Amino acid sequence: MHTDETEGPRAPDAQALIAEEHERLRVLLDRLNASDDLREILPRLIELKDLLAVHFAHEEAPDGMHALIGDTAPRLLTRVDRLMKEHEGFLRSAIELTSRTRSCLDETVAGIRTDIRKLSAELSDHDRAETEILNDALLTDIGGNG
Ligand SMILES: [Fe+2]
Ligand SMILES: [Fe+2]
Image (cartoon, rainbow, N blue to C red; front, side, top):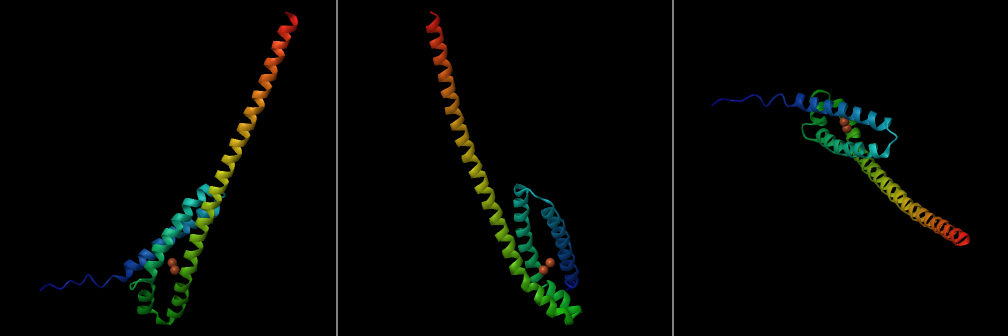
């Protein structure tokens, strides 16, 4: 029977995947830091939270950081453990920031819409009153001359 030996080089795949995700994270974080626009920030925060969830799962997987480090440098495992414990907090922060940004946008948009409707109704009343006065004056004027 033929023995397949393609099982061996699993580790470099996991390592390459983690490195690729670190690069995607770096680009995303740069974009997030460069933006002042909450409407632009919201989809990026959602992307961050999704990417972090996937990335942390890859790092914590059986063939993740532990396997990659434990095989070659077991002395570093304590540091790896400490880093893996930080994941939960980062994910919680990303989720919290996403929901804060969303509710901030919702409140702002709803507030502005309400104020626009109010201004618009008041201006319409105001103009209607002026038009009435103008029409009255015109009628009085016509009456006066006739
Ligand atoms: Fe990472
Ligand atoms: Fe990590």
